[in-house]
Length: 82
Image (cartoon, rainbow, N blue to C red; front, top):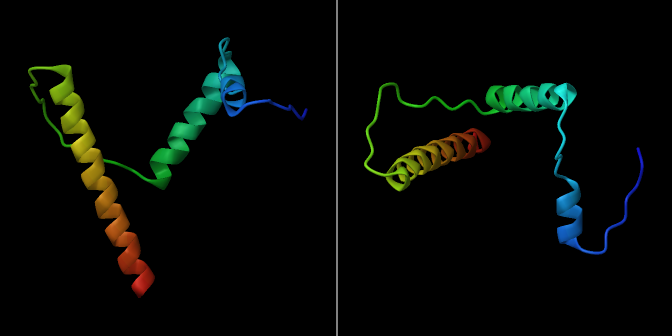
């Protein structure tokens, strides 16, 4: 694997982008998301939700995900105390 040197952090960040993905890239991405789902599954509430704006929908999703993250954090802390 080659070693690359960058002058700035922004230049290094830009090098991470893949502007021409191939099938192997999508396979690795699928494996990554599958692993993340097994490592930290999140179950969204069932049903259909109506929102007046995209901002309202995003706020609902962010609140749900934050609640889930706080719940997982509390569970991990309680396991550490045992």
